[in-house]
Amino acid sequence: MAMIGELLRHVFRKPATIKYPMEKREVPEAFRSRIEIDLDRCIGCGTCARVCPSNAITIEGKAEKARLTYNIGKCIFCGLCAEKCPKQAISISRSYEITAEKPEQLIVVYEGPRGIKKKAG
Image 1 (cartoon, rainbow, N blue to C red):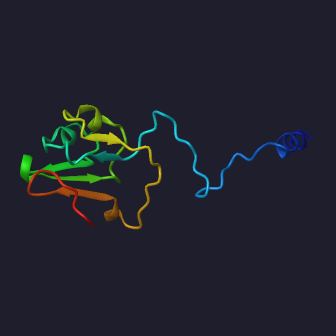
Image 2 (image 1 turned 45 degrees about the vertical axis):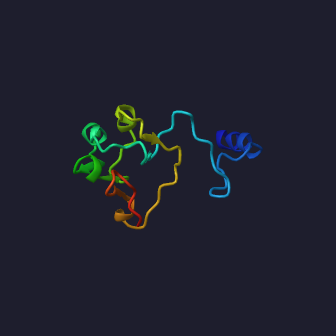
Image 3 (image 1 turned 30 degrees about the horizontal axis):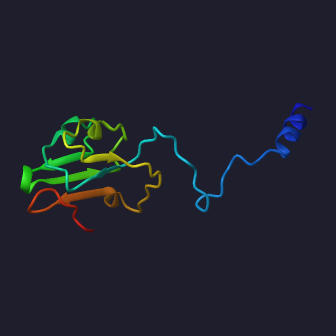
């Protein structure tokens, strides 16, 4: 009898699910996802790599010849890198759609002759 009462309470309610991907859910203000790097501000100092607890960010080289690698698959989305960046070059995205067919597609490499620049591909 309790099951029938439960069923009747839920029959006329609005559905709990949404029609994703046609409808997108609003994310909370404090939601954290992948990082985004402002290439014009990044100086390649390596602070982000040092504070990253999951080693999702690595930097090879210094300043003008630095190469930054961000592995989204390793990232725990804690936000320490953005918090500690001295030039505020790192921001936290609010996008929750992170998909890839292969793990290599979750690796973003930034490099260039005049500082960190995003490598296409």
